[in-house]
Image 1: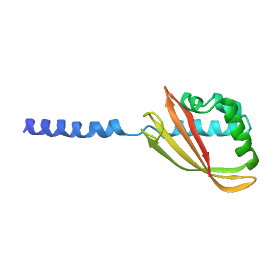
Image 2: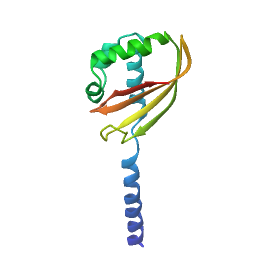
Image 3: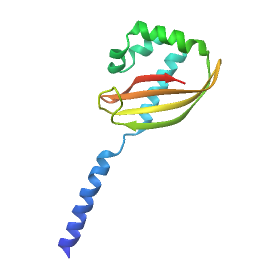
Image 4: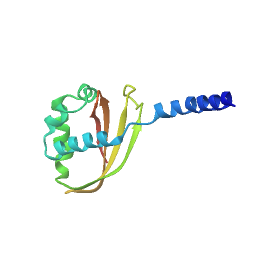
Length: 138
């Protein structure tokens, strides 16, 4: 009987181990990192937002090009009226990016000059910190 209980216990532990390892990390720190970064963009601190982005992001777009893009695309939208989190999805792999730990976070946003926009911020884990690695506005 003891062998049966031990065997079942070991089997259950072995079956749960992959599930426990596969559990996504807490989205709270990733969300906080994304919101802090969006506040820099909202304040038109485009250079600072580039500085605080992930190394992958900074390697993909130069600081002057990022500033130009934000000045041309984000600034005309005007001030932020409201922003709500629509969802945060954990991903271990994204197209065109190295495998890692990512959260793709979508916000429903109303700007002064554009209502019902969707902002998508992708954050990547770098060490113990979540840093922005992508940004898109629809």
